[in-house]
Structures are given as structure tokens and as C-alpha cells.
Amino acid sequence: MSERPPETSDFYDLEALLPDDERALLHRVRAFMDTHVEPVINDYWTRAEFPHELIPGLAELGIAGNPYSGYGCPGRSSLFDGMLAMELSRGDASISTFMGVHGGLAMGSIYLCGSEEQKQRWLPAMARMELIGAFGLTEPEAGSDIARGAQTTCRREGDTWVLDGEKKWIGNASFADLIIIWAKDEETDDVLGFVVEKGTPGYSTVDLKDKIALRVVQNALITLEDVRVPEANRLQDARSFRDTAKVLRMTRAGVAWSSVGCSRGAYEHALRYATEREQFGQPIAEFQLVQDLLVRMLGNITASAAMCARLSQLQDADTMTDEQASLAKAFCTMRMRETVGYARELMGGNGILLENHVARFAADAEAIYSYEGTREVNTLIVGRAVTGTSAIV
Image (cartoon, rainbow, N blue to C red):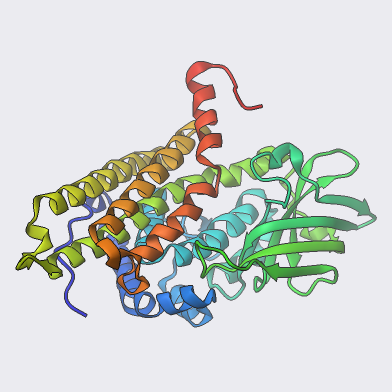
């Protein structure tokens, strides 16, 4: 493997906003992705399998539950957490998604909605990645309208809750130890959260096949048939969908950062290719149209990263709004889609070969573009804020 071109994808040196210790950890994450993930990830992507042997190495980095304080969690800044998502996605979007589901959605649900006893019970082991989490919200017939369209139900019987229904597209679900399930109370219609433990009778999964994006992520269809969960496993501070939305608001910023990382990964591979590939007797990096594509990509990356950096600063100040997170998610994923397309274009026919990596980024971008709120839904959230009128049907 030849040397990478000089680092240019952080063109405005946003990394300098981090303190030295966080910057050093970011470099450790980058080295892990370059050394341990990149050499094997295409093979796992082709086979649509997850590299479980990488989990101990990820655990050693100490990055699970990064922004939470206490309970064995690192308690680092939202800015670092965003750049961490970017760095993971720069190496591979599936690994970033795995960590986002475990450390963001699953651990975040317990951190934001769990009782003190529940946080003490589960978060330390999850931070060590001894227990892996999943997050079950989306359903076969309810995606964008999950707030009012959820069909999964729960009913109380003494000190036990009985869950019935289905969840779809749930990352990590087929091997997770703890699965957060959101269900509608049959009596009150409120959406409540539950921690379903691996091996609970009535809980079953089937991994979805033939995906063209995030093939390494094990997305499952969950079936819940008379699943009995003790009251002690109901998230005590999750009383309505507003509490679910708190988790989604927090993680949506991370998805915006992840799209920047996906763009950076494609750009860096394209730049490296341009310096090595020769046509007409010279490296294609010396041609004007190739440089034009590289600069278009870099502009998209820089604009998106700067937006995300400011969003994370607002998050650290506890002033970030739903609308601000939604604008970043919508804008950055649009720019990502364009950027990975430019990277594929620069490589010509070689851009569709998995061995050159860009094809994986281009395919995975399609999933990032849609999850954590589609562009259309995030656009309507922002539109409501700027016009004062809701156009969400």
C-alpha cells in the first residue's frame, strides 16, 4: 500500500478546536481504522457480515458513550463526539453506525431516560463494550410517522409488561445483549421505553438480506410475541415520545458528522488515486478537470464540517434546537451524496470496483442519507421553524 497524500481533508484545521488530549485520541481512532478496519472491511462488506473480532479493539479506545458523564463513560465534549463519528465514518460508515447505535442510541436512551439504578446497572458494562446495545423504534409500516403510527404495544400485568409487535431496520439487534424497545401503552397511548435482554422468550430476529448499503451493519426485523419485561426494565423517565425525541435530537448531530466522514473517506481515496493513476503520460491529478472535482469535494466537506462544528458547540452549550440539528443532517447528507458521486466520477470505471473503496462509500451514503430522519422530514422541521407554519401532514 502506497503512502496517502498529505492530509488536506480538514482544510480549515477544525481539529485544532479540540484540546490536545482529545486530538490525540482522535488520531488513535484514525490509526485503528486505517490499520485494522480498512484492510478487512471490503471482504465483510461483500459477505454482509459483521467483524465481531474488532469489538475488543474498539473497546480499548474507550469511546463508547463518549459524551455521557459518570457510569464509566468518558464525559467528553459534543464537539469531540461529532469528530469521532466523522473519523469512524472516514474509515467505514458501517463501523460508525454500529458505534452510533450502541453508544449513541442505546446508551443514550438509558442515560437520558433511565433511573439512577438503571444507569448504574447497565451503562458501565456498555461503556466497556461488554454488553452491546440496540435501539428498536422504526417499524415495518411506520418510519417517518413513528411518533403517531407505532403499532408495537405494551400492557401492564402487575409488575410485568407484555410487548407485542414488530420493529424493522434495527442495527445490532440480532447479536445485541440489550435492546431498547419503544412501544405504545394500550391504556394511555403514551410511547414508553423498555430494555429487553437477550434471550427473553418471545423476542426473535431475522437479519435483512440483499441491502446495497451499510452491508456490514446487521439490520434486523424484530418480532415481539408476548414478550414479558419486568417493571424494573422499563425506562423510568420515558413517559412519551417527547422523551424518545430527546435521544434522536442528540444523535442526529452525530449522523450529520458521520456524513462528513463518509465524504472525507471518499475524497481521500479519490485524491490518492489521482496522484497515482497515469493517463496520457502523466498523473491525472495534473489535469484541470480532475482538480476541479477534488476542489468541489473539498468545498462540500469543509462547508459541512464547519456547520457541524458550530452545531456541536451549540450542543455543548445546551442550546441546540431540533431545527438546527435537522438542518445539519439534511444539508450535510445532500453534500455527501454529491461528494461521493464526484469521487466515483474521478475514478472512471475503476470507481465501481470495491478494491478502490469509493464504491463502498458511495453505496453506504444512501443509507446515511435516509436514516435518522429523511431529507424531506428534516426539511419540514426546519421549514416549520422559519415560516411558523407546519407543512407536515
